Image (cartoon, rainbow, N blue to C red; front, top):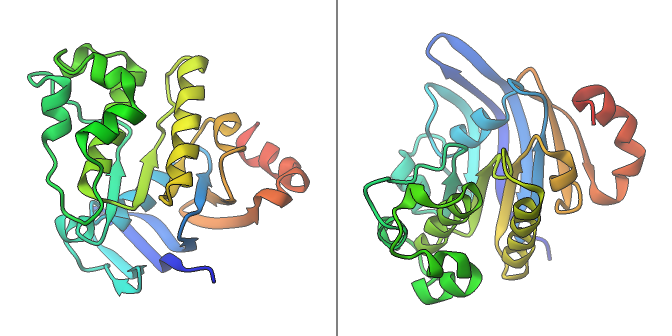
Length: 234
């Protein structure tokens, strides 16, 4: 039986006086990869930030594994098994790769050990003693995701992880997502790179002006390409 891990209902969010999200509704089932598509400024990143409590005022409902999380502080959302990887990655220049990796605490059962992470990301093992910001863009992205995996998070919110990376690295990130899915992780992707996201997602949500305007499954992708062309120019 399908288990619902995340349910968002009538979610509104603000940055100061700016009303960004206007009644977002979406669900994510355990073990799914769900992609949020839309133009820049559509509200995709704000949706991820609202889930983890990093916007201004919010109203509506965010249920994680059945627990209402709308009023929780970010560290308490993390304890529900949610990991957020922002677009800017947040790698510390003064720390080595391994020191960056060891920063987050294990806050939920099942966090990956360093040995497991090095098995999944052999590049990071090779660069364990290199300063974090001396890594390539792709290696920094892998490090940012690996830090989340140490915490025990099972719901991963990944924001534009393919941006600015060479195609060969983007392919490695795609393989990483499929490997995580095979291990039972649930993933919400915000992506501008449609070709990267399209084969990975079980379901798609399309956003415009802070609202979900369309949702469809992987099996319905081909019949929605004309609509995606209009919204995304893909």
